[in-house]
Every structure is written in structure tokens, then in C-alpha cells.
Amino acid sequence: MPDPQGTLSEPVEGIATGAGHLPRPAPPRGHATSGRARPRLYAIDGIRLIAALMVAVHHYVGTRRVDQPGNVIWGRPVSEIMPTVFHFATYGWIGVEIFFVISGFVICMSCWGRTPRQFFVSRVIRLYPAYWFAIVFTAAVPAALPGVWAQLRPRDVLLNFTMLQAGSDVGNVDGVYWTLWVELRFYLLFLLVVLTGLTYRKVVAFCCVWGVATMVAPVAKFPLLDLFAGSAAWYFIAGLALYLMHRFGQDLLLWGILAMSWFMGQRELGQRIDVVEHVSSWRGAVLIYTVFLLVMIAIALGLTDRVHWKWLITAGSMTYPLYLMHYVAGTTLINRLRDTMDARLLVAELLVGFLMLSYLVHRCVERPLAGALKRGLDASFAHMRTAGHTDRR
Image (cartoon, rainbow, N blue to C red):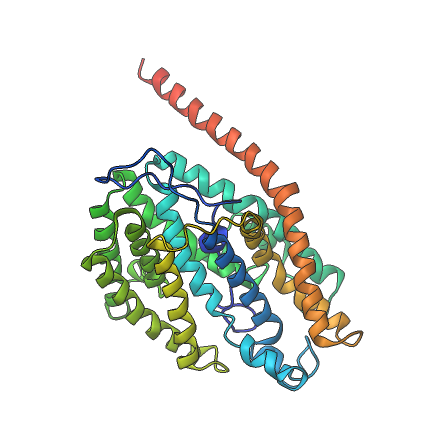
């Protein structure tokens, strides 16, 4: 679902992946180990934050909406106010594709060896706490500062708390939430693999079957197939293949899947530019995406294992709240403050301000609420097992 301004610049697991550092993968099967745990992938936390900042800058100064004469955000085209920043910011929407690739990688990593119940609990406690806060925060902004964004009806705002509003054809409180619907569909599909137990063969088979389904969906005209075989599928598939490289080592089959995902991905980038992101170029978009994939390949092959910068853990923890809160609130503040200071300084201060707010949300809302949710869900599943034994008596 496109955002309110008709641009796609939006997260999850890439941006919604675990608070703090990423989990350690189990030692690769079939390989001898020295007993030492494999290093944490700090580099991915850094990439997530960069992608979130790309999206935020794109929303503030790199979309068609902000470059139209008389727009309500800046009042005049941003390409006149800060032409150099505008030129680079027009490519910030690619942060979304980066999120999707990282999501495939990290979901596969975090699910390996887990039960379906653990998979479900981990997704709920990761996605919902910050999201619930963001809904309240974002819904309050148009009410307090009207004139930029229209307010949703209360019943539609309440439905947003489920994260399933797109399935009911209800608008998002914030346009960036459309990606959460994409993520949820990926989780549901991947749960089918988790139910059978993750193995190299099963994940490869999933990539191949889902890839074929994605290619035939446009001509099959089968609504259910189209629902689960969206245009983001090849980005998730790339992430899954990269994780298999990381866990089991590279082979020709995985390189083939990754190459196919690149060919299909560059096509999707071009279609995005043709339909929505007209201010970007296909060559520039493909270049940025290719560089990102090369960095992910380096991570998958262990070339960044020596990166142990502790601050990247904090950077990763701020990514999801930043993504959820920056758009409606940030553009509204630009509308109110644009005549009070230099435009570049305003954007920089907004980014710093939302980073600080995101850190507070992570520490004061996300972590405590996630812990309470986990305890409650674990108790619920324990009660379910107990009740099941009782029913059989």
C-alpha cells in the first residue's frame, strides 16, 4: 500500500528485527567447531540504522510531494531550497528494499532451531510494543497540529492497533506502516517452513517455490496467490539465500538464487521508479542496491566478523521506533518550523531529535512491554498445554 504522498519510503524485520544485537546463529551443521560461539553481526545493526535514516531523509526532502510548488510541508520545491541534498535524498526509498533483504536474513537466523511457538512469541514482542506507542504518538500529531495530515476516524485508528488494517482495506495512521503488512505476510509464509523444522533443503525449496509463485502471480490472476507473492518477495529471498551462505557456506545453487533475486530486484526497482519515484533514475537505484548486496555478501561470508563496535547495538535498537515515528510527526514539524531556521539545520535537528526519542521509546516502552508480553504469552501457552492434557483425561 503506498504512503499518503504516493511514495514508497518505508520496515522491519530489516527494521523490526530484535532489540539490541542480533542473535548468534548455531554452528553450521556438518562443520566442526572449536566450541566458540560465532561472532555477533554488529554490521547489520549499522546498516539498519543507515537504511532508516535514508528513508527519513527521503520523506523530508526527497519525494515528489516536497518538490511540488506550494506543498504544505516546505511551501516551495525542496530542489530550490537544497538542491544537492534533494538529489541524493531522492534515492532514500531504497532503504525499504534494504530492510526487506535484512528481514529475510535475520528471520532465518533467529528462527533456526526454534519452535513455531517461539517464533510467534518473538515476532509479537518485537513488533507490537513500539508500534502501539507509535500509533498513539502519531495519531496525536494531526490532532494537536492540524493542517498537514488528515485525521483518521477513531474506529480506524483503533483497528491500526492490530497491525492488520491493510487486510481490512483501512488506512494507516502513518503511511510507513504499509511495510508491516508486507512483513506479516512473509512471516506467515515462513512459519510453514518453521513448522516442519528449518533445514538447508527446506529453505532452498521455499525460496524456489515462492520465487516461481511470484513470477506467475501477475498472469495467474488468482487473488490468494497475488496476496502472498508480492513484489517484495525477491528481496526476502535474497536475505534467505545470504543467511544460508552465512550458515552453511557458499555454493553454486545459493549464488544462483541470489543472482535471480538481483535480476528480479532490479526490475522491481525500475517499476517503482516508473510508477511512483519519478525523481529517481533506474541506474542510480540499481547501483545503490547492488552496493548494498555486496556489503551483505561480505557479512554473509564472514568478512565483517571483526566489527565489534558496541555502539552499533544501540544504533540497531533505535531503528524500528525511528522508522515508525519519523514521517507524519516530522513533516508536520517541518511545516511549523520551516521559516524559523536554515532548512538543512532543521532536517538535521529533526533527525537527531527522533533518534533520541527512539532511544527513549526503546528503553522505556519497548523493552519493558516486550518483557511483560513474553511472560504473558509464555504463561498462556503453558496453560494451553495444561488444558490440553486435562481435556484428554
